[in-house]
Length: 404
Image 1 (cartoon, helix red, strand yellow):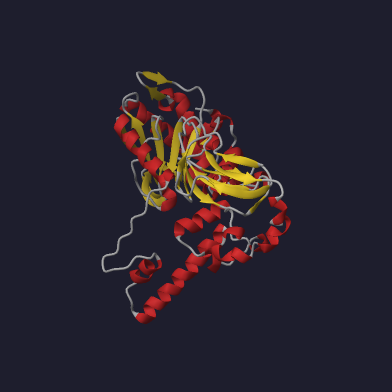
Image 2 (image 1 turned 90 degrees about the vertical axis):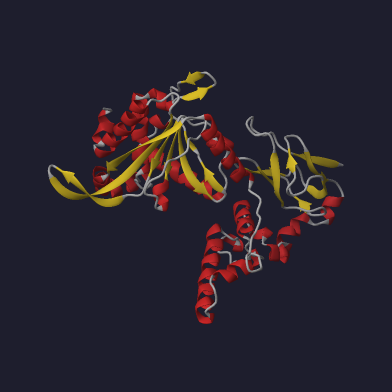
């Protein structure tokens, strides 16, 4: 008797998936709910669990193949064949194939190792039972880079040659053709779609974050003690954005054909860089979240983005987006809309700069803000006033309490 392994139901917005990696081969023992294969979609990586115990049979779709919901991936053979492979003893035998690193890698780390072309057998795992963690992979790369730099200095060799050799590229003018991941391809598609279908314009301003700094400095210890999370800048920006969106509803709207859809809720997307590229998890009903709730949600999303474990629900929807290029050192940028949204707020690096207050020159922590918006429905006056509202709230956070 055999049991089919089928592609699970995909969300409405996702047409197909690509087989990223099989974790079993024909003849391997399989346990119920054990991850068999990773499917890469436009947004996340799905794990397909085993529906029953048995032995892995024929695989119908290989790595790199494109599949749709319901398609046959393979079969699990049940019955007498299962016990012959001694599935109970399989975990003890797993160290044998350690050369591939598969038995001690989580799906997220496995993808990272594959993307970075790292030999997992050379990485020392510090997790439970020797499991390799993401931090172990990065530490291995750092150590290898430092070792390579030392060798370069001693041999006076060009610093780029070892990296090229390690990547398997040789020649005087090396090149390497690497196909885009589905996520990267989808990001490119959505960015081109936004620029093609919207009249994007950007307005700028700057904000003095001294008042926010003072609040954080005064209450950071108590806040972290009471809520078990740090008080960061992002919660202030989320709260300020929500208040500004309430005053300018069109910035929270979207275009659908010839109609403008005004949203009576505030689902704020937070753009974060994950292990597989840029993702935008959504803070649902951000107007109802406290500062602590906001910080906890952002922290959790950051971890999931690095591990590649964000769900479709966490990435779907959104009425407005905030992107913080400042964490990478960006001073100024023109963020691109996250379609079908009509506006996106860009945060940037905080720098101590001289400003004039009450006729005197003082040094203050300043940040440039950028608001990109769809000029089809948002006028320049509304965009400028929206950005000034955010600036005023951040420079006088008491406005958040008084909602003015």
